Image (cartoon, rainbow, N blue to C red):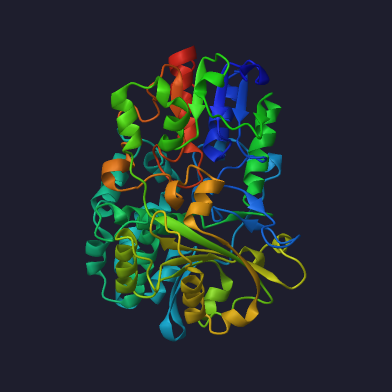
Length: 480
């Protein structure tokens, strides 16, 4: 089997954003690099497909990309020179409330502040340091633990972000402020009582005010297409339909970087691991899941809250306490009646995604890990709650449950789109060591999936940082 693969200085297993980031970093340093991808197209969690009907393009997993847009690594690549074009929605994110009310995360911090009444000043004081210095902040929060580049800014961030969001929101008095911060923090996919959940909310709110929540024109796969073009410009090779089932099938290479979850790594390399590291990888914890539904609609969603009609992303969860209860139930293995739902309406701003006057809608609900039930009505019910008449405009839909997500991308164990629970104990110690997070327990092998710092999201930092470690150790190359 090894004869099927060309010889190379380095191999990357998995062609997701992190795997490609690792591959590009090494190729730009002069190495011969080959990427193996199990599917017939590269992309990992960053694919776009015609899931329902020809001509209607749906992002299969990730959709909205503030961290890709502002990634310290991606910003150095000039991907716009390889065809990538970003679209900024009029409003980054809206959180509807009952009765046609809601709250909006605007690009301009002051616009959001004006809508929060007595809480506006406090929200401004909390967010302004981070939104104003968002790009600088990314150099610290999208890296492993270490001495920060911006110590005072990070000290501020840590003091606030390490709090459980259930505690953090007590300083606000309005339902709007609490809902806005709660919806942002729900991206942690953790119970609101967990320490560190506020950090997720601060990151997403600060990025929205700092750079917006954009998405690639044409689909998330256009980010991958640009990365592939850049990689191939440095003589890199991507081999698709090449699932690695036994690590012994690889040709000898100085570096092998794995854009795979710990469970997958153990499956194909476990026979070469000593008992201690193998047990540690097998005990790596996975978090709650996504239950995804894509729609084709006959017209735009009839949101009751007017600003929702101009938003790229929506958080549907109601009040802070409703979201808190739903997230608690998810982590108790219960599918909530009213789950937290994320919605993206890209076709409002990108007509290349759809046909005629129809719209496409991307959505997912938080669900228990490994959930096998049917939560489609739970999700539709939350949309209908804030957009009466939504059911009447559905032309067709496509459902991907948690176990379907795992089948589609084995890094999403049980449907966990973050490839590992992101509580404090595991956020930095991903998957084995906080001090050497990218080091696999085999010589010359490294981890780079979202199971390593800085965790979930499309940013390429895990791959880039893993490649930097590998290049320094194996070739004495200090990549920038």
